[in-house]
Length: 67
Image 1: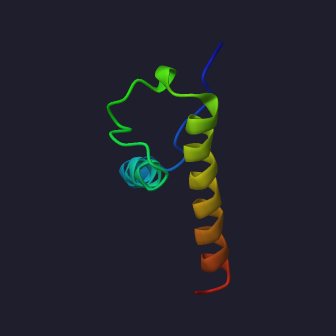
Image 2: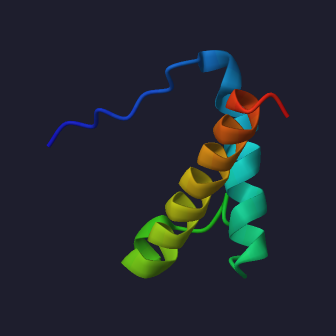
């Protein structure tokens, strides 16, 4: 199975990783950067990705609205 995940803007990778860690911390997943993601439930991993997507959409909407 191939992994098609790639960062479209490589310069944003560090900021996206930081956002991921902050969101994981907000939802109670401590040390998310060092934890074995395979030991987390699909729900826990999904929350991190879901909240990241939600925040990124909010940022894009604000930018499109000129805020």
